[in-house]
Image (cartoon, rainbow, N blue to C red; front, side, top):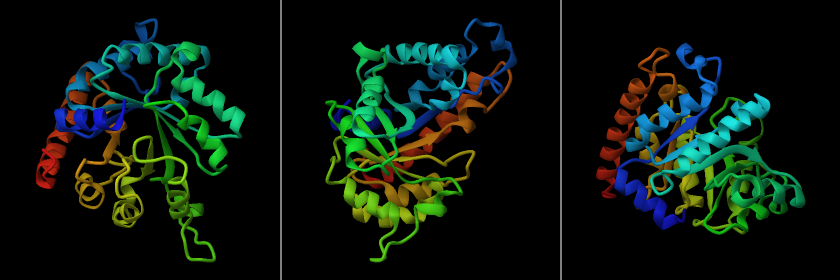
Length: 280
């Protein structure tokens, strides 16, 4: 999906919601455990319930890889199902990959080359700290996106990401500055945590046109209104992720209905924020 298609999808759904499919087998409703693939059944129900309100889905690979072959089968079936809605949603592999060039080439094929791996994600999250040659193989695929980790929402982000060099430039700012020599606003996004919302103004000065993937709204306590205030552009420029607050809005048989209510509530707030910005 290219940039124009993504913007059209956001405007069409009046939403910039991304649902993180962090589908923890230990947390899904008990009645689903009777299925041969409980995680896929859970994902399918969540997708069906939230698709009218959602522009992106983001499976977190850890929740699938940790279950070995069975987990990867759940992921494959989930991606095949999302493929039936290809024009209705953007898909992100939350994999946080990044390695030397030939290894990154294989990672890129794993997520982008359907003929090779069976996966056809629109984007993948990448750790930038091994430099350009670890990122560039992902950028070789047309209409695919790299989402670089810039300023994350976890507590440990302050251990490294905000440290300054001798010129007074923070590490996350160096990532933003240098990486713009590798990609552009049509194939590169950045992860910026909602719990760092007030820093978005500084980030927007450095990357005024790039999309930002913003985790941390919902269960982590980030403010959607603050994210929009500091991070929204004329094209929206945001994908705001919510995982636990939607996936596990209920642990009972009504989990899909409660997920739809939570996603719908977020979409309504997003629609209002976009209207106030003049995007709609």
